[in-house]
Length: 275
Length: 275
Image (cartoon, rainbow over all chains, first blue to last red; front, side, top):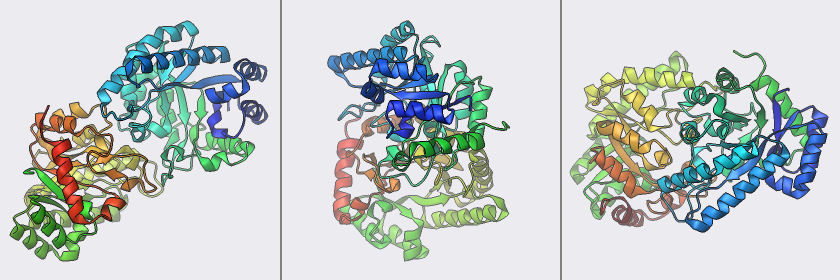
């Protein structure tokens, strides 16, 4: 339990105050926040609520979307991510999750999109350090390459992150996005203290109509969490294990029940007797 | 046109004789066959039809499914793939496309599944050479890792293929499965004369309810075919460009029309003025 965090998208129908109270009631010591939920409650009030509840904010979701071309696209992305860094600092988290963005409308130029990501990271990284927040690049599953993230593998995220000091840019290891990767064990070892967050949910089939929402509770799918967690532990990662699930059916389940399932699966599938 | 091939799944509602006649009428010089369609027409009759029509059989789909555990699973997979090799030889093609198989029912052990693939390839490779047929390992998109293929990247396919002589084991480069890969250019260069087949269709969004059927005509989606073809040409691949599309809507279109679209897109998006 001492490493478990609720990413609040998992209880999407809860407001931020409800999610905070839910964690307190369930004995979950940390929470990953989303910017839209923070905005709904107000930044200062959100910060006060989590602080008063004694919760650690394991991460803020999310910055990124760096691939829009042109000076206006560049300016907007920069401003938006600076705001996200500021919010992260005020909320007291050291981790801003970065979903880098997909191909711009009408473009097929992956190389150009990836170059824009690298360029904007270079501008943002020193600011991140000033805020005491780390940019955590999240490789998304390759099925989101066109519309969400042109960074698709941990190796690719590390190639980017390693251009910067470790305290400025790290990576997210999300089970759903990376479990299939034949290089996963090797890249987790390489990542070592670049690992800024470990997010979990399961790969279940069939994929739903909206592929974004196909993620399951840990234990309901095909991912071997014990082995994955073992790789992370061996690499030196002993931080939060954040449960982040996009799933319409789970969203429609009462939050208390979702948290109970989360806790149970955490013990039976993720931690417990390490191999 | 002289490199264009119709993979017959693209005209799924055509029988083999219809697909052969369609190619002849449209001036398409090659065809990729499917074993179920060949069985429907009969092996000897299928071989006679393509030979009499003067078509090249660019590949046979498909062998593989090598991940079932246990002696019975092993025996079945071996026997089935030997039959596929024999059929390929009789049909006069030098390429058997291999979809290696997903996780066995109830298993989360990717490493074990991948080991079974390597072991069965080692048994099959010498037989392939005896038949004058090359086993062409097809990495499938990572979204098919659980249910169809535990080989997900070209690098991984090459790591396997390179255990064997080039004439025994090669790889398939399919645009749909590989376009997102940040290592794609580099791995195509590495592949060189291991490239046994180049299959094309486009990545379109949204994914349909059955993710298998989401592939579009070349030019309808997000893939930069000219750059991809350029990488293949630079690597020395000058073989067939096989159009393989799984798409319910395209299947319900008259085959003649599908072939016209295929030919048009081939000229405007795949070949033509190389960069």
